[in-house]
Length: 541
Image 1 (tube, rainbow, N blue to C red):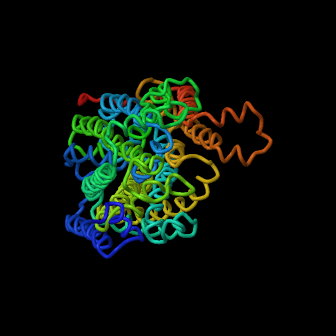
Image 2 (tube, rainbow, N blue to C red):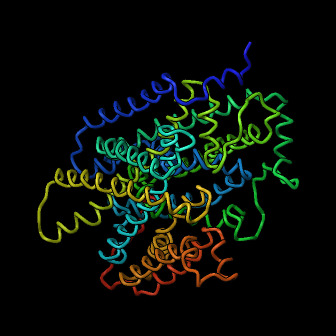
């Protein structure tokens, strides 16, 4: 009888007919759900961008997880465990702290503002110019962050189309990015935020299902007791370093997931992601109340812990497969070149037909969930913060149907812009010479330094003005850009040991410094004398 390795090796030459059928069924599911949502008439922008505030908190929680994790999780979290350890899981400490701050401070204020955009709160505190500046900062930052995620999602799509050897070639990645962008735009146009959230629920199930299937298949190939696998992981990282280390107690700011970094830096990153970014905050606003939104964010963050754990386990098991092949019945060499391809390499070379199609559907699900949500949130911010105020200021009366129509056009435009920037990320990532997960997180945080500082000023102080807020937003954006590694690489006159050390510290510490400076700058302004509205809300979590 043929061994499991022999059986699987027969299926290692790419997609088979049954794989394409499984993948086709996934896209058919998306098409059907999109059609069902398109039949629901969106009467106004609150319907289209906020689901009429009738989304159940549990669905919103799953949507938050699906959007925040993205294809970066599917690809780079296994890579993180494969090349290192499981300290990335500890970043959830900061995210839990951030969720509590958002639930008890940010969300009551957002619901009190009763807007499709969280930046209306800034207009209440500082003035119209602050709201517009924050929205523009978000739009630019979201182009950068979601563009990086689309780039990550295009990697498996390109490998599927062009093969393992040519899948990461720049010209092939551009084609894959174009295909993902087109599908994401078409689906988001169908039913607004409601379709995005419910599709996230479906795609999250596919994403987790694919990872669990991988764990079962890899584990079934082991030829030694599981206790021996654990022992090997405890000593296999070299120099008696365990791959099962959860907490990095180092005080070295260059360590990406050290305990100080996850408590301080990732708390701020979480507040930026879920509290000052319209993309994720918009989901919480689709609940009927601040309490419902609070439940959704706390549940979503807690749900992320087992989710990330699953993908870290995949990475550890893949390390056994490729670095300790004598412990498994599988045959095949470890992936050459970039280790980011390790999970995709396993899927394409070791997974049997049908299951392989399911796994690639999981990758597409991860990539599309980020794209769908981003362009919907950007459309909401554009209509609520920029277009509608501009029309109103000219005393022009437009129907709600008009704003929904313009919102759909903006969805298309932002989708195209995101696709273009995703192509730029192909070269940006190689210039920064970082792992995919650190690159994606670093790019995501570019807009957050200014936004966090401004929201801290609005919620925790009585200081600030339009001028100081705009200055803080500009400074924060510039600060996060100039601290990127590609800037250092281009400016040779900066090359000395001290500056090189600064550029080598993890981006969360650069974000922390940025937040301190932007909060200080934002507080330098005096509160406008005409501002009398309160941003406190009785409907606290």
